[in-house]
Amino acid sequence: MARPATSGERQQHQGKNIKEQPSIMTCLWTRQSLLRFYLFMTSLLVVGLLVLLCQQEKLSTSRETRPRLKGWLPPQATNSSKHVEERTPTPCQPQTNVAFMKVHKCGSTTVQKVFLRYGHKHLLTVALPRERDRPSIGTAGVITERDYLFLPRGYPNIFAHHAIYNRTGFHNLMPKNTKYVAILREPLARLRSSFKYFRMERYFLGLREATRSKPPVLTYLEDPKKWDKLYRPSTRQDFVDHICNRNCMSRDLGLQKKDYENKTAVENFIRDIEKDFSLVMILEHFDQSMVLLRRRMCWSVEDIIYDNIKPSKKSNYGKTQYNITDKMRQNFIENNYADYLLYNHFNEVIIRQITKEGSGFQKELQNYKKTNTVVSRICHSRVRNPNYTVRSSKGPLFRVDKRLCDQMKTERQRWDPVLRRDYTRSIFNRFGR
Image (cartoon, rainbow, N blue to C red; front, top):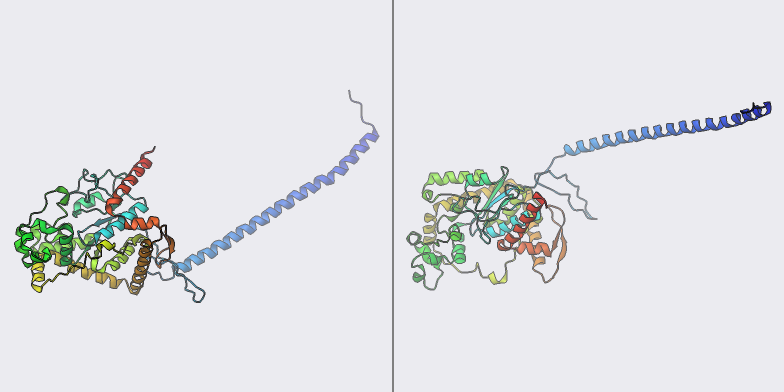
């Protein structure tokens, strides 16, 4: 049992409490001060954020009221002597669903390589023939599931192999927002190229024997209607859509043979092509067509770079002299009515399109030609492992290295195995390990 505290002990305990009371009051005051400090700082932070948001809103509003130029315009370069104000680019989304109709002997291989490279670079699904090393998909305008490789996404993003255009078939195969592109060439120039490349004299009975010391195409042009009756093309399935003697560009774009002489049918056919296709390129305006392609697709200059230096072994390819008379030319025009109507129409269309693009188009065209030449020369230089940075007026800096150089030179035959491997990776990633 505890003894009661004495009066002395009670006084000592009270004195101790008196000493501890100031200490407790000090702690309470400190906590209140900290709380007031935190509240003050929080208020400052909130006010600062509100001011920042107001300034940002004003800035965005002022930017939206500035006039915008059509097309994608990156910030202009600056140097120490002259400052160019940066212009806000008009936003656009790169087009990733494209069907390119590879019209025979119209410079279409060069464009095909651009599309295949774009598909590979951006991990897109490129339509491939089920049969290896086959240059085309489908036959005579009919494409079935047996003709193309299994599509990991259920549809292709890029179609760039040979095929005869069939509106219904392609619209069933490709996504709804697909952009359609084709390329044409002056018909007589296309015929000369076709005769040389395919050695077409083999497919006309007696044409070789009737030709002496001159290109076989000249013998053919003396009387196209006569030789067309003696035309015997290869029956090999992989050649059916490739060897053609008359109105070949119209045929590749879907015109039926029975309509070759029907003016109304040909005019309706051309009208439908203009409706379906976002761009019909013209080989005689090739670089202009490529710039239009970039603008229509919202792509970068790097995406449309191509190798414009021909290999030395082909340096004489287009230098064969053809003494084509006016009579020969007229014979051919009469025999290829549909192709000339098609070509002349879209040649006029592309000239109008270029004019509508405005003065900036010509500046972009010149810059594109220079950039293309620089890149091609780098890739054909003796530097084993090139590694350069190229500045373009329409897009960010891009690197020119061995990878890009190799891809620019890669033909369809070498692209197909690469794209098949892309398929494998895509299926692997889609369905899991």
